[in-house]
Length: 60
Image (cartoon, rainbow, N blue to C red):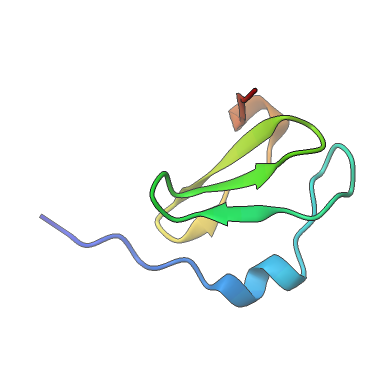
């Protein structure tokens, strides 16, 4: 079993929500970047944030 590379939290300073341009929060447990403004969670795969709306999941 291979280990998933860690997400570099410094990326949070440069990344914003592609829909609203709002700041993102990091959910380490689910490996997602959360946009509360857009109610979307963007996945992080192999340490790389996937900032495509088509890959995001809707959140409450």
